[in-house]
Length: 405
Image (cartoon, rainbow, N blue to C red):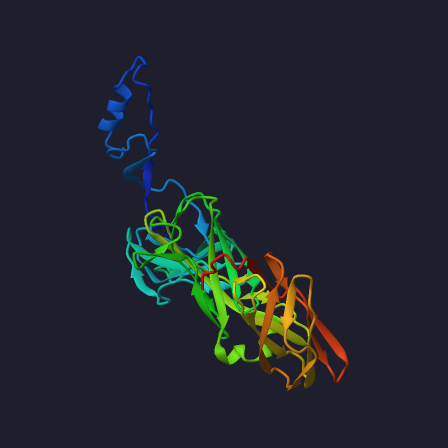
């Protein structure tokens, strides 16, 4: 009687792919005439009405292991077969996935099988959402006991690489109104097209987010990318988001200092025949602009004004320091912009993280795009002066031109 023998097979579970057809065509005036076109129409593997496309309508089974990308679900079929003519007992099949940072147990059940008859097998299907790139090793171990009571053990290793499917780049723009605009550039670096199911930004607790990737048509929101949200290989798409600080944080000047956590991107896509993948970036951070001790921002200003006619703006002054200030406002005229009012007036004391609003009046003596400049704030406690030029721009037109309100 020969000793009991076990055989182990591990296969990756993947969906079939569409058959690729290589079209052979010619011009009508060539010798074959319409022969090649007719043969393609009669070919059952081609798409009706689109015979010259390489993509067919028939499915083919995978011919190799294929690529595995970060964010996808890796599925594998494990089969342990009893090749001997004996009954073996206490069979335990264990599947572990070894990555560069951890070892994961993927077995559906860790219970032992009481016995396995000759020419029978134990099957198991494992699933794992891939969350790391680089080398992965699937370790399949089998232990069992022979009829003579001898304990046997063997294992096999299956190595595969996990690739990066997307390249994500982010750009930040800090607006004067404390709004943050985020541009996310997403590139498909795989060899097959992707259907972008969802690209969203999950903001941090300090912000509310508005997606700027749709336009209104007939009262409905339409994607700026059109109805077909496919991303071809090596193509890049830009997504834009506007983040506004929540009211309870916007009132505190400290939120505009230092590094600010914005949120994270959540990307969901589908490939081939509906295989789903998902990636979530780490927390995105932007370096907030430094405003010094005192910040001056514009709350309201007209876009277009009449020549030599007064117009009004509203300024917001925020104390970004940790000390109380006693401020004096000075207004200096430029060649084109003239301030209306008394310069050198006292604004009073301004506590840390507090703000005050100023309504100011100006007029312009020169047409064209003019810069609002010439504001000076002096802290009488430290005898320190803060200068503000190029605060904003207004378009000055002749009074004979009708300005739309």
